Image (cartoon, rainbow, N blue to C red):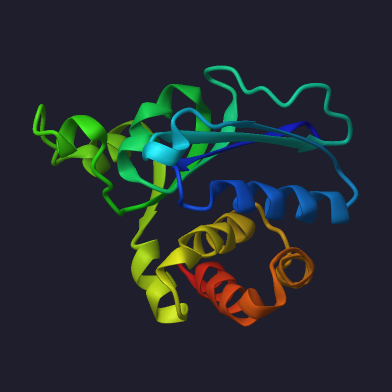
Length: 190
């Protein structure tokens, strides 16, 4: 297998770091070499959080350059648009349709663009879903990350059983059932 590159992008507090840990543990359990790098920015103030996950037979660097990402997993629409230049030709974007106002919108200096989703779909192969609603249905709005990981796992042709085992081993026991349900809902999403 050639190296497969995934960018997980979102806003601070959305669970991108747990998502990258789950992905890393899942691909390790499949016998791949994996490298992960996290970029936090102003994550505690609602800023961008980016995680690079690269895996394959042998991976030398976690960094993904522009035009190299096979998959962008975006937890928020503007974050998907911000990192679109990193997607390779023929790559895939899986995006949560949730909108989180960045600071310039919160302060009234600008407005959140209306057509982000449509613009993304003009430029890339996009699967857009309301992961927040699925997470709430699973039991908590904080499970958006695991819903999205379920969609990504299916896209990458990973068996659900591997992911369920990784979730059981990675998340605290009191959140295990919630996260398993959220994963299954994402994995079942078409």
